[in-house]
Image (cartoon, rainbow, N blue to C red; front, side, top):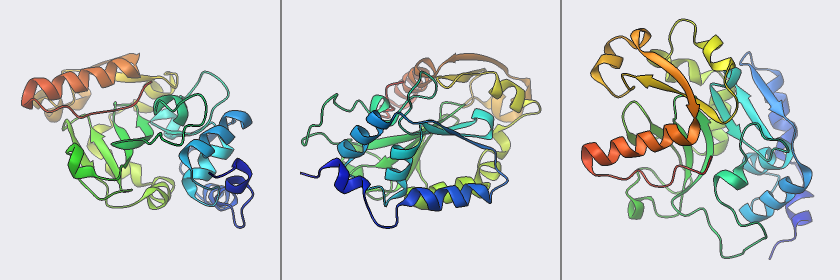
Length: 239
C-alpha cells in the first residue's frame, strides 16, 4: 500500500505547472483553500500522486470556481462551500484499499446540473460511452452522457484556455453572470420549461430560472431520464 508521503513528495509535482497555466489565462478562476488533512486523505484514497493534475488539484486546493461559479471543479475544501471530491464520490472516512469510484469519478459540476466524470475501468458494462479514464459529461439539455474525447489533464487545459465559451454557447443567456454569482457552491439553476424541452431550445432567455440545491437538480435529471427512456444515468455524485 502507498503511504501518503510517497504520493505527495514527488519530483515535478503538477500544482506549480497548473498555477503557471492559471496565471496566463483570461478565464476567471478562483482557487479555494484546501483542508490539508482532508487533502492528504483524498489523495491516498484515490491512489494518485501529486505528479498528476488530478492529484495536484485534490492536494492543493479546495476547488476551482470557474466563470464566477458556472463550473465548480472539485478539490479538498475545508469549509462548507463547493463540495469536495471525497464527499461527492462517497469515499470511506478511513482508507479502504478495496474502494474504487466504480462507474466513474465525479470531478466537476456546472450550474445547469451538468456533471463531469472520469470514466471507470469498464464504461460499456455500465452503459457509458468513451474509454477508461476519459472525461464524460452528463448533459442536462440532452439527458445523456457524452464522451469528451480527452483525459483529465487535457480537459483542465481546455477549461483554462476558454473552452467553456463555445461549449456552453447556446446555453448562456443575457445576464447569466449575475444569476450565477448569486448562488452558493452547492446550488444550481432549475429552468422552466426544462433545458431538454423544445421551448427552452427555441428561446432559452424566455425560460424562468430559480436557485435550487444541486442534489435536487440532479434528481430531476435522473427522474426525467427514467421517465422518457427508462435509462438510469447512474451515479451523479452526493452533493
